[in-house]
Image (cartoon, rainbow, N blue to C red):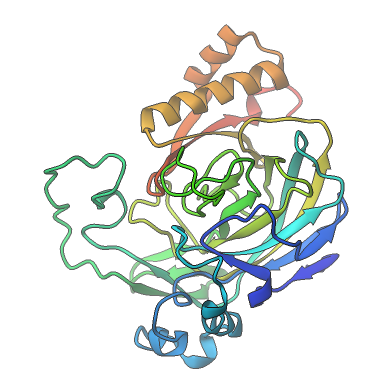
Length: 355
């Protein structure tokens, strides 16, 4: 698909592990324009060993290693602002939207997503993801997970089988790909590093999601959907990355099928439309989000966002909206492994006349 602008994942167009609020825009667009954004996944590009050698041990051929990944790896020593941040993700951006100001809302229409390499990596061990000792639900003295034989880096090939791109998990298990960006974000209002609520030198780690979007890992954000984010900084300053070939809700091992993608996005600015948390829209559902370290609070916040949406957008009373949430809205744990829990409420469009 052709786009108005192209943003390659060259070293000068990416950040590593954080969301700067003062970065020079890599590209500036007008509302309604489209951008093709290339991303490179951190798996295979951030380790101490060079990508060709590291990935070669897992079975990746040299010609299957993106030049973007090689160039990023070679640029690590030139990234003093990036080193020491708490996130692992490589993010492409920022895209500035002309006229965007705090208090506006940015709509990101996801028009196309495609894989750039025929492989991805999933990391899984008996102490990763929800079994990690730093998982928010972990308690001192919890026994090990009991998961034995887990390999820290599992290379999974992807291919087109019977006309559909799949992950070749095993000879008998083929997982249909559903590519999406695990991270889509605008520059935050109040950057914070480490655990939510702790601010250090105005640095926002790429690991936890927040009001700015970020590492939401919502698998429904495939091509054909739209994401809505509040604007906190002039120009909005949009970043994308942590690209995934496929993921289950929860992302329980700590990551998905980490796979480099290319995507086409349309940016639409809504002046003076203020929202307090990320929202999304698919062809069949409105999606609201609750993000917190505590899963119960994340659920509570997601329900409150759903009630507020139904009151403001659909004209329900708060009591009716709360009742509808219990009867017809699904609340899913989109991800639970990034310092915070992300609960997403799926509101069916089919409930409303005219949809």
